[in-house]
Image (cartoon, rainbow, N blue to C red; front, side, top):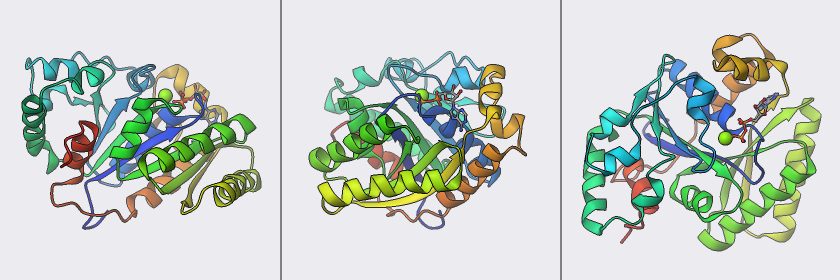
Length: 272
Ligand SMILES: Nc1ncnc2c1ncn2[C@@H]1O[C@H](COP(=O)(O)OP(=O)(O)O)[C@@H](O)[C@H]1O
Ligand SMILES: [Mg+2]
């Protein structure tokens, strides 16, 4: 991330239940271990699960921020794992209805945190609904999660197609989750690659990571502890560390306004 942070990226998918929230939470753990200052935005407005996976109950969310009750730094909820969560399940929809003046005020408040964050991870919902597309067009990079199930392939392709056609997004990073072995994961990636190559022009896809299917995940979910903390030696934790290393080396355009501010500007449709 040298010279290019803060990095703002989504963890997203066409199909639900493919592991986005587990990947977001454990990527946050691993990036924090690499020395990055990470904030995880829980942007699945329907099924906000980040706090459930962490066994935490943040009291304030973006809604309270918009009510003017608290400052942004008070909404950022620290976890015991070296990163913070920005709970957003409530408030994001209201946010788009703010007046231009209120939106600009919110952007001003971001000046205080922009310098303190290296990485903003946006855990989105699944599908091709407006909110998912909106978050994905506002971020600088997108990690699209697939599993070896054909439904995940079809739905993920639909998401890529919608982002390309509606928002001219052309660059995607792919993570294959719940893979029984490396060959299966590579075959899944090849299928996505071929579908994009045949039916959509100008799409660039790279394989960022392969995360194996591992019973350690379910066990950690039940205990509400990130699997990289609960079982750091497991195959799935090793896969996650490799993915975090790749993400930490992503080159992204450095914006004059800062990538976090650009993200909110795009989300709030404040781009000139
Ligand atoms: N690598 C994996 N190995 C085994 N099970 C997994 C793996 N990743 C996710 N899961 C299982 O899938 C379920 C859904 O994961 P979640 O992160 O909530 O998905 P999403 O956020 O995409 O809906 C989890 O409860 C977990 O049990
Ligand atoms: Mg989720």
